[in-house]
Length: 573
Image (cartoon, rainbow, N blue to C red):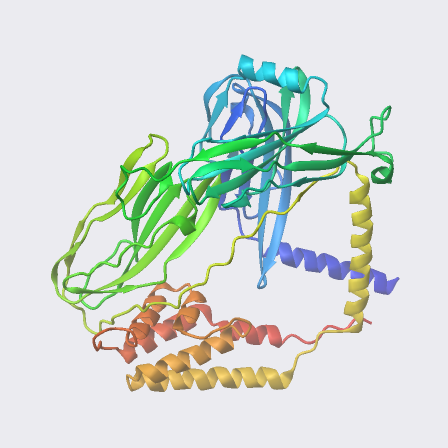
């Protein structure tokens, strides 16, 4: 009994400790699972709060009632524990049925003192032809599939979205969807499947919608091999599977094939004369500075970030911008980075290039215009994204100025992941019950193993770590005092390895990734530039050591490590 009470108190303390580290709520973000629906379909509106939520705080859905019927709402809270730091996220979801067609503005929603951003939803009216076709082809079907593409005449390498919908009025088990296939085109699933309700022929269906991205690589006619849906449904005369945990063994197997869809891919138009073929809905170029606002002085590095943003293209399709050759300034490019996002059913590609600009002469510094030619798929015409030229006034060099930034080793992009069959959740509660039982058994096993292996601290390893920290720090101080950039680089890398032993630290770029101190990061870039600059540059070791000490006072990572290791081992009696 005493051991049981002790374990119970210990688990409570552990839970409170985890939650005590949660960050306070900082933001509230709204998101729609789709940007376009019909008047016969529902849409899911999600509110995401980052940080700990007030247990009394709930969304005020009232502003939505003038344009939507709120069919249901739910909430869930998740907690993550990464490197000893906990974070919380609360998500509220409302299932909305539009009351009218048109472009509907979803107003900001309040949760306590926080407010989300406004959104826009396009609601199309169900056409008479569509309703007639639906009645004729699926008049008595309880489960059926629909398939469509967003365009039937795309250009080469233009985004084509293939959408398959599973409509069901039956409870199903072991349901999964085999994705479509197509020759000479890249195909991958876009995000997670969507779940909502829709009214067809006066009947309400549960809908599972899955989208796939096609990128045709050559012109011509494409036949898309349709998606295939498999499931187990109740036998005739039975309407429910929830009371039978062995339903999958006794039900009726259902196999449905989606309607066939074909596209005619067009060649790149002769009217396009740009350097890169970019068929998209929109393309823009943006510029930002670090630090912001920037201060331009001779010998002081300033980082300019150029970002290409495109709707309808992946980040890998976007080009690398040319590195400008500037008069009276050295330019050090970083490795370009690209990523792809999904927002409201749209593919958004981002491509970033960071340039460290080091002025070498006071006066006017001209940054040239940046242009990217692309093809507008909405207007079917060529277009140009432009970042205007900029003139900067550079001040004379301050005392002890340093010159940064070096290129970083290229990053190898991971291969595209091929789509896999999608398991569609069963409406039965039995799988969840079975999963819960196995989860509790796993917890009990883990607890017994933990009791037999109490945590211990290796005193020799702790002393060795402290000695390594001191040695690396002393070596760095000595190198900085002698303005010895090479030994300073080696000592800083050794020091970083003692602070983050579980992280691969190979070069100064790896060190910089672990540090959030902007001033010290600029100093690291300055040190790195000594080894990559085309011409010899000066390096101020005393200034670098001062910034290192200031950073150390703010963070003191080795002290945090030592405090954790000083805790005595925990033994359960």
